[in-house]
Amino acid sequence: MYRVTIHLQTTAAQQLVDVTEELRRVAAAHPEALLMALFARGATAAVMVQENWDPG
Image (cartoon, rainbow, N blue to C red; front, side, top):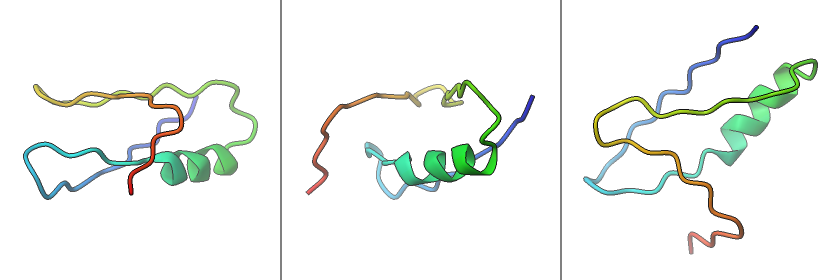
């Protein structure tokens, strides 16, 4: 079992942060891992999956 922590610094009270590239790097570093679980720690934090999200 692997545990990888990704630390993010936000700049606004409400902000969407795309972590796709960070998760791809973690997956590439551990190709033998078959499952990835993602969670956000904090009273007001959340994980959102948005297909085809366009940040621009």
